[in-house]
Length: 170
Figure 1 (cartoon, rainbow, N blue to C red):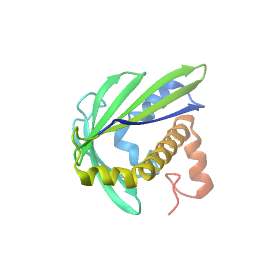
Figure 2: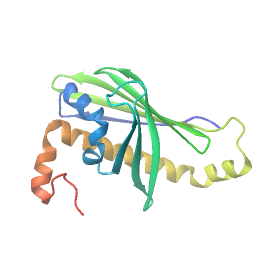
Figure 3: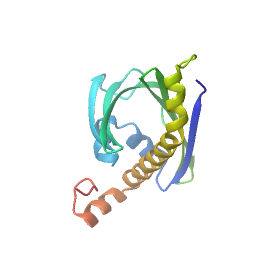
């Protein structure tokens, strides 16, 4: 199946060191990212190649848990996180570029299915492909906004505004 790629870019109002720290703080991702409900470390403790965790998100009103791992790291610059599910390989690469006291984040999400997909896989892709792309793009944008809020320190302002410790509402 063909490689599908979604690219999102955001210039965040925070220094790249702060953005890197938030991006690589897997242990606290459920607090940082509104879309993440739970993180369970599986293998490793530090953010480095081989760190594995299970990440639970609510997707289409249902909980979905994926096991992910750090596939590459160029400290303070870029990282790639991979996952496999149902014969599809997913890869998410984050590239950080300092721009004065701000940071450009480019996130590239790609998926590649089996070389010889079944008729069911082809039909599913035809029916749900666009919906999945829109949902993924929305999720990436939301994650980037959340990363900016925490890295720039505005997450504390969110918590005060909505009365929650994490910036989330019930």
